[in-house]
Amino acid sequence: MKTQRDIIEERVVHNGFETFLRRSGSPTLPAMLLIHGSGPGATGWSNWQYLMPQLGGQFHCLALDLCGYGGSPAPDAMPKNTAEWLEVWVAQIVTLVRKLDLDRVHLVGNSLGGALALHVALRAPDLFDRIALMGPVGVPCRLTRELDLIWGFYDGPSEERMRLAMQWFAYDPAFLGDRLGEIAAARFKAAMQPEIRAAFSSMFPAPREKALEALEVPDAGLRMIRHPMLLIHGIEDAIVPLETSLTLMKRLGGPVQTHFYNRSSHWTQVEHKDSFNTLIAEFFGGRI
Image (cartoon, rainbow, N blue to C red; front, side, top):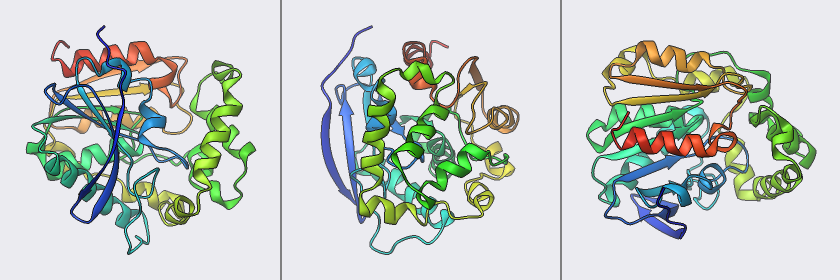
């Protein structure tokens, strides 16, 4: 597989947003926008570091930091709850795609990013082509204990608590080996930046069942989303249950394919990175 390991970092100013963006691959290639998940300390790079170098030879890969995460500052008028943050993130993504003049960009959404991919596809369908969702929220589902504790990280933040969260992301904690401490320390350091902590405090407030509900796309909206869709999920996902992908498979209005990994939790793009990258390339290339 042809690769492109050079990662370009930049800040894009658009419609009142300042989005930190990482790119790999030539702008002449089909564009793929990568949307990360919701964990404290998450960034576009933390989610997609194994995909961007590998697929940059076939696609123009763009990984943004959502507002309030990583290098993308929160709005001056801080959103007060999940519903308000949803509107900010949707506007950020749609205006970024328009600012970059991307033509029928493919979308990959991880967890929270999956819900955001659904919302932007519904509201601006002509901007997007094929869509892959990994462990997505965005439909009714139970709040798992693990997600409740991740969203409630700042109730008692510690490096040990971050280490525990990282273990939940993987089916087998031994998979991370000696890297677990290093990964947890880096994520903890990122999460404890004052501006990141301040933004996160209003993103997913208790009761967090309401936060999940705020991210849902109504059934009528799901039926209107007709983009070709690939749903990827770990069967043993401890954070977002498999049932969300099963629900989407039944309710989306367009053609849907699924790929489920056993012995896998909420990190399929890490636990099965080579297979995951091949799957994304084949789907976006129209070969499956």
